[in-house]
Image 1: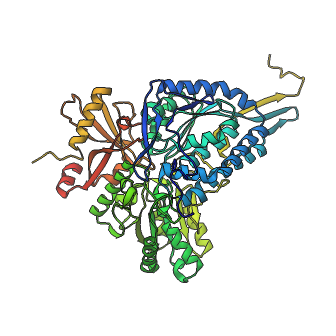
Image 2: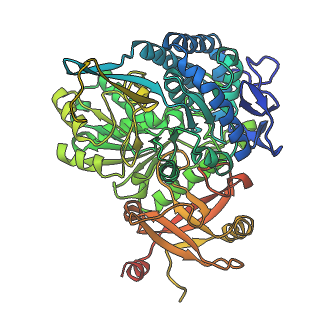
Length: 507
Length: 126
């Protein structure tokens, strides 16, 4: 098969419902105010379903359901919670192609990515946290011969999760798997740009979770996200998005003295030392792929390697090969297996990318390839497509400093190791970075010197569970995709126990 | 000579601000950075987003039909990297962006940028 049929077509693997309400307490509940909004696919720009437009009343109802379910779920043995997560993973695996089609239609990303990355990684996340919670142990401290401090992990209770639109199912899995494993009930709000695929996922796994343990409230940030994030009834807020909303969520959380985890993006440097080009071999080829990773997921990745720093000695040679590799990117229908770059997720995202292509040129950055909107013809003319673009310029330019969230990379050169680190760290953010060199000592030193939470070394854009992911600087707070995320969803209960019959003698 | 400013509004943006002001009350902007809906101006009720010493007030925008100015803020660290550019708040069809007020209307505020001239920079940076 070279092209999957669009959802709802006669030979399609899956179909979306005409409408999605809120998923609350194990059933679909219409929005209290009776309003819905249209959900278009970025592939064609056409609406394919309508979505409940949630408000504070709906959030309260979801919180009621979550609070009703949280105590029993929190008491459920870890082994049983892990079984539930494993069953979810199995169900997803049985429906992998259907989920991939649903996600591609919702988000616009190429089907080969949803088949090979988004959905398999989401499946593995549930399995990872199923294993992690089974293996987790409390601790004890022997204070003295008769006094012991026991440390128990306890769930937080009811947590709020606000999911971004760039990996709607995978980012939900990143947050849901640890929260559910740790014994919390969840109220989740999907992004209003991509609100539907999580409901298709829910339709596949609904029978596996007790009612109320997972609740999905749809709607706009200001109408549904804000009452959720500011509620005194949630024990924690997890958010992936941008800095201003991140600050606002911290502000709301401060009013309730509640913790947050935030993943707020970056402007990740991808550093290519001279020795990368010392041979025209397999590694050189891999490094070129690493450069071209800026176009993965249409550049809509918080860790998009959107700044390529290339050492002067091989600058021209490497860049020429990189341009050539970029121009080989196949654009087309996202449901076509040959397509490497699909549609941007929304019209406003498309407009924002175009505004950056404009200011990049104005600042004097040179367009080496791409640089404009792409019209792929036919039904795709209504969709949101951008040509993979390489800018050449300097690190002070805005296209080097701001996350464009499109298939756009800004390239500059550096002289030596210190210059590379200086440029790499000259950013407000510190989420991801890449280092490419055949010299392992240099790779190690560079990786430690770059102020970012994840430094891919001779690789890029791998997101395995069991490797911590999160930001330095303004890129956020917390670490996902690792068992340490369990700590972000757990309280520590200390029982300080005396086994001595003797009084202290104070009173 | 027109007044030198760091931020302007397109007529469409001004019209949307009038509608949002009438529906919600006095407004402010805070320019976001980072991923997803980042690099977009977020519109809130004035005072909803707490600014502090880490923020810079770029403009107090006069909008016809709106009694009070609409403030436009940015974090100071971000401003250091944006200060050589002039910003125009525009509006495009779109969906969603953090907790910004206009999203339910099916539109999105968007920043369009140009380089400040040397004369403008001299006037603004002093």
